Image (cartoon, one colour):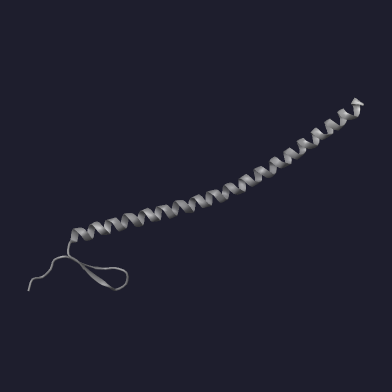
Length: 90
């Protein structure tokens, strides 16, 4: 009786699998690790982007509110000047 050489691995629960080629196992494990790290990095970046966009939304709202206040003041001043000039032109 000949004994197989290889690797016994355990994945997803208690199911044990036998991999004939240890190099193939290492290659697949490396690929899974790279995918995990890539996915983890992508999730972290997305989270940071969402946080940044939320912070910028608050800043933009404050700037817009300040801008509308300044615009309203400028409009009132223009209307006053226009009314004064119409009054005096008659």
